[in-house]
Amino acid sequence: MRITPRPAAAALDPYTPGRAAADEEGSLASNEPTFTVAPGVRDAVMRALGHLHRYPDPLARELSLRLAEELGVGPDQVLVGNGSDELIYLLCMAYLPIGGVVLCADPPYRLHELVPPLMGGVVTRIPLHEWVHDLHTMAGIPADFAFICNPHNPTGTVVSSSALEEFVETAPVGLIIVDEAYIDFADDPERLTVLHLARAGKIVLIRTMSKMYGLAGARLGYLVGPVEVVDMLRRVRAPFSVNSLGQAAGVAAMNERSQHRRFRDHVLSTRPQLCQLFLEAGYQTVPSQANFVLVIAPDEAQLVARLWDHGISVRPGTTLGLPGTVRVTVPSEAGLELLEHALLRASAR
Ligand SMILES: Cc1ncc(COP(=O)(O)O)c(C=O)c1O
Image (cartoon, rainbow, N blue to C red):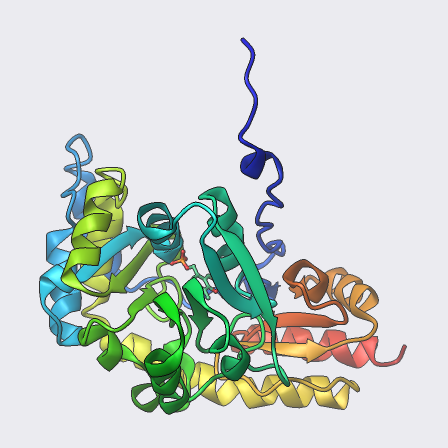
């Protein structure tokens, strides 16, 4: 056998997932939720196990309907994916021309820069301005695609919905994709979201059920966009990419509103405590609207190693395109105590 990868595949710098710590409360590298699924979700998955010999619904109709109701859009404007990451692949596969220009932030969420070259696109990274998307510069560059992550990963910063509206009206960009993976942890998600632009077919919005819905392992994300985009992506995708256990978990998780509210409240009240801890240990943080905080750490490698010695895993900024920083997930109460203990010892450096 003689096989040669396509040049874009051979050149790929693959995605590196965060390291898990030995104990869950110390695993602060992947912005995962700090709660396990509710009994209702567990029961739904157990029931779905009885049908595991059958293929799943290729359209994930029940979950799409529930999401469409909640979002106030038609079911034909919603597409459920195997994580929102799948939706990024599908959009590039279906719409990005060979040689097409893709704008994203510098640094971006990794998948926004990793996938387009695989599909023949060329990525132009626009440096953040004071940690925030520089929409003004982006709007001056003609492009086929633009990815805007709001709140942004890895900084947690936001651009206002009015700034995004202006960008959508003025930017010479074919397809604008707004990734709202962390929108539920913003102080005022209703004000920040650009769901209304997606309803109106002006952008494509992607969101995930991995964070607020607590389903990172079930791999569920969704997209809201024009009917013809949803239809096209359904045509090009692998037919059964969203498995039946995930679909069951997603539908059941939509009934757990009080759990989501509690988790959101936890993130919003713990985020400032997390920043304060780092401040007391001598580190500044970037104001965050997400379930993580970016810490400015000139001693990045030493800090990561010291925390690891205390059973805590965080994301080194170097792996995110931001050397001299570390990204830390908002922890559980036990995780915060662990961190406090580690930082108090670490600050005696
Ligand atoms: C900005 C952003 N978009 C998308 C994703 C992927 O989410 P999913 O788990 O639905 O693939 C993540 C995951 O961390 C993310 O940070």
